[in-house]
Image (tube, helix red, strand yellow):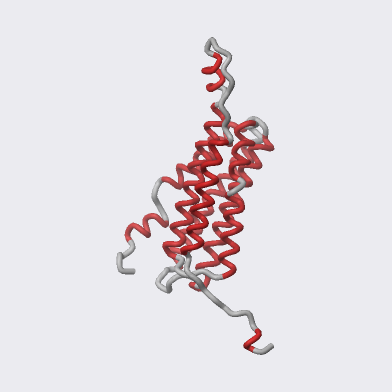
Length: 213
């Protein structure tokens, strides 16, 4: 095949990817609350009882909203390091956003059926898929410094991979715990967010990274 007939190798900036990601996250995070409907009031304290009975939905809403916030922050932190994009990275991002867009459904499902193992497992699998695609996103961009600057160290690349994989590890434990008690699974889903909110790993690297690098 002549060189002129080969598909061109190109790179592009990441601004459009980040803009698309921001838009999808904004819509998905808004849809979460729209899945919670106002209960019917029957008077005599019935509304208060109805609201109290909705605690699983509000808990799952909180877990999912913060989890999406964690993924949004991680996605942006990736692009603090990723300086270029190519066709493959574009499609990895599309796959990532596709998995993110399922969260309102999986949240509504577990909020309505938190005592059923199937709903708990579905939610956990959804979160695992998001994490694994995020891992693929980072691994692809950093392999051989493909889309990042040369000064990025292997130690930092590995550290970020470990941080990403913390989530799936806990999600797997949560799925296993659903065979004992689904409330344990909910507690573990909440724990994942706490692990990521507490600064460490990539956060510490970025905090102490020289301003001119």
